[in-house]
Structure formats: C-alpha cells, structure tokens
Image 1 (cartoon, chains in turn green, brown, orange, cyan):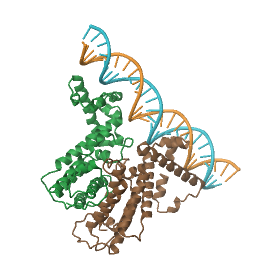
Image 2: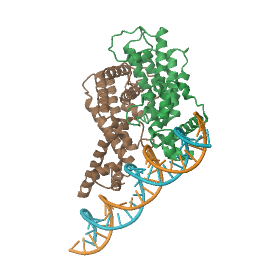
Image 3: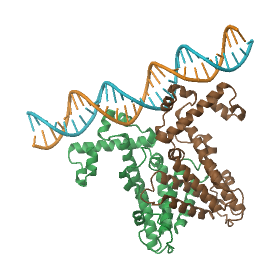
Image 4: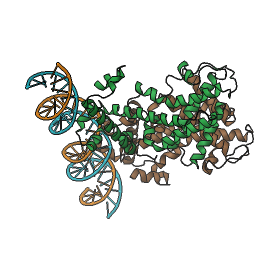
Length: 240
Length: 240
DNA sequence: AGGTCTGCGAGAGCACCGCTCTCGAACGGC
DNA sequence: GCCGTTCGAGAGCGGTGCTCTCGCAGACCT
C-alpha cells in the first residue's frame, strides 16, 4: 500500500530511491518482475506462479506479498511493461520522414515482430483479459502508445495534404479525445476516416492475434507475405 | 479413452447409446458439460473448476475423471460446442437470396451478437489459447464454420457476376483447401481477393475482440453504429 | 442361475496454488 | 541507545488438478 501511495503521489521525487532500504526494495522488486517475465515467457500467464518466483529467488512465498499485494498486481505490472515495450517498438519503427504508406507498414511490421518474439506477453495484452474483467486504469496510457503512433501517421498524412478531403457526412462514432489523437481537426479527417483508422487499428491486432493463436493455420501459406499484403490493403482503406 | 475411440471410429452408429449404461453415461456427460458451460459463463475459463462442477452435481471430484480425462478435455468440449453455436448463429443469419453486402453485414452482426451474449465463451474461442498452445485437432471443423459461411458469400457473389475480374497477379498466399472454401475457381477470384477475404475475416474478429476486451473503451462512442460502419468498410474491401 | 467381468462412485492422498497471520530479527531515525 | 518500522520466514487455511485403491452393482456369458 505504500507502493500505491507513493505512485499515486504527484510528487514524483519520492519515486527516486534515496535510502539504502528503498534501493534494496526497488532492486528486489525489479528482480521479481524480471523473473516473473521470464516465467511468463515460458509457461504463460495462467502458469505464472508467485510461489515459483519466490522459490527461484530463494525466499519464502509469503515474503512476495511485501512487494506485490496479489498475483494480479504482479500481472498488471507485467501488462504495463508489455504495453510499454510494444509501444516503444512501434515508436522506434516509425520514420516520420517516410511516406504514410511506408510508415503504416513499418509500424504494423514492428507490432507483428514484437508479438512473434513475445507470444505469451502479447497474449497477456491482447488475449482474454485474465484478471476479473476490466483492465486496471493505470494500464491505459501504456496501452495507448501504439494507437498514438498510428494516429500520428494519419495526422501527418492529412497535414501534408496527402489525403483527399472528406465528405464529413457520418454520425459521431469516435470520442473527441480519440479524434484528437487521430490527427485532430483537418478537412480531410472526418468521423468516417477516423472510424476507418480505428478499424485498421483493430484489424492489425486481429491479424496478428489470428496468426499467433493459430486461426490461420492451414489457410495462410506464407505468413510474412500475407501480412504485408493485408496491411497494405488496410492502408488503402485509410487513403494512403 | 472409450469416448475418444468411439468418436474416432468411422462407424458412427456406435455413438448412439443403446444399452442403459451407455444412456446413463451420455446423460451424465451432457449434464456435466451443461453445468460446466453455465459455470464458464459466470466465472470464466480460468475459474472453471472440475471440483466445483462435481460439488454442484453432488458427486466426488474423482468420479469426474470417468467422463473427462482432464480439465483440458472438458475445456475442449466446451470450445467445440462454442464454435458450433457461433457457426450455427452465423449460418442462420445468412440469407442466400440477399445481395452480398447485406449478407456480409448480417453474418458479421450475428457473430458480434453471439459474442456479446456469450463473452466468456467467445474469449475461450478467440482469446488466448488456455491449454498448452495448439488447439486440438477436433476443434478445427467446428472452428471453420463461420469462415465457410463468409466464403460462401464471396463465392456466390463471384458466381453471380457481382465482382469485377481480378488481375490475378499476386503470389500464392492462401492454401488450396482454403481457396476452395473461398468460392473455388472463378475469374474474379484470385489470391489477392482471397487474401483480402482472410483479412476481412480476421478483422471481423479483431473488431469484436477489441470491443469485448475493452480496447475500444473511451474511443468508440456508439458501438453498434461503429461496428456496422466498420463492417461495411470491410465489405467494400471485398468488392461488395 | 451363478460366476465373472467391467464400469462406476467414493475416499484418501499428493503436490501445487493464492493468501493470511504471527513472530523474531534487522534496520533506521530520533 | 531506544523504539518504531520494515522485512523474511514459517505455519496454516482453503482451494485446485489429478492418481490410486477399494467396494459395489449392473452387464454379460456359460
């Protein structure tokens, strides 16, 4: 609960470990999450066990609860880290000087590459929500990073005049906050293209999930080529 | 293992329970799966417990293993039933006399409606694969039903001359078996449109999964309208 | 009809899990 | 140097999947 209190504090200077005790605590917390991540990568989310982490760390399982109030909290930590790693991969893949179609494809490829390299972690992010039902609030900003990158591609394309003007005759489908992320106000961006952007976003993850979860087995012969082809079709949907 | 042997037999007459013992066994098996399904609907797949089903049924947990060799086998049974229920809903929603765009939208709506009505069951089908990794072989035919319906819509549209001729200048992306399901041989069906069909298929489930798993929260204001809009965009991708 | 064979349910038990509580030791600020 | 805080360990609770054994009862065969 001290952890929760300190993170909920606006005064982020308290986050920096100053005393030796805080240093040790931060180190052990990191060690736990690292070990939990490797265990997640091998046995998956359902097989991740607090006791196994403790065993591997050479300490009592009960001591684990000094650092994470529950197994779900540990999972939440891994989820946030996963979203951040994926978001960073997407951001790094985006070259703002390239034409929109290339940027779109590059980001999609980065997402797929990360997913294939971290299948269990990806499943934890985009598979069935494992804890109760709703994702904790603190995961939202990290989860949004890939969407922000894709939104930037769309907005840049619009501002560069690479998109035709939109008819603007669609009902309100997208929230104003999300519209802001998807390029903001621009004559070539109406709610129709914003909805298509959201569709393309979910389609990207639909394709990656289907490949990773085996739904394409027996249908797709060349996964790499199919994915590129599919993502180019989606970019056509966006007007690129 | 008797169950497995009998289902793997080509001679399906052995499936019909003749003796009183087989009747009782079939009844109890059905009772177990029914009870497991309701428990799945309430506590989800991870919370589904063999012992709880046994408790509710008033019998020892060890007796459960006379009917299902493991919890995963019970899960597999529920998965197959789920695929079949979803497939039946899709088939029932498809009106072969309607124009392709309407058929496509109707099937998509049926899939979404079923998913919203059975969220945990849907998560079991299209979320993270819960048992080890690969889906058991016997789930494949049931899992294919929705795809078959969508493939029939595409094939019918092609045979009715409602699709433009395809350039046919794309590398082989789709397996021949799947190509057969997606309308077979026709001048307006090349591997490009087949790949787009696979993309649209995965995009449908990507959109449904995103909505169900909460990734659209805060972005989409009218889920019904957004879904219809998105599915119509996808049907445009198919040439409807 | 009697004997055997087979499927069935129950119980005990194993190893594991998340989580709680308590207690003694070590540490750090006053 | 004292005292409060933090920490790790241990025992324990209720739960899980799964195994093994045993006794019963229905089914089958002679």
